[in-house]
Length: 51
Ligand SMILES: [Zn+2]
Image (cartoon, rainbow, N blue to C red; front, side, top):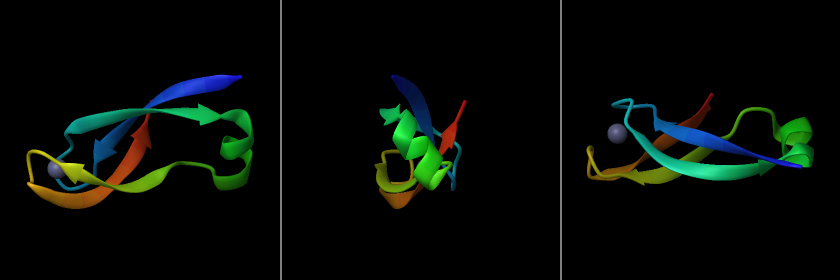
């Protein structure tokens, strides 16, 4: 079973991405933090999972 989560830029708060998170991944890693390109900041920033 997979869940769709939203990824939010930690710099400006823009919600740039959605991703699919598997249940196994949740148990192993907890909250997702990924380095992604933010179109508002025009650079790569850390993005965190939001509900
Ligand atoms: Zn941003």
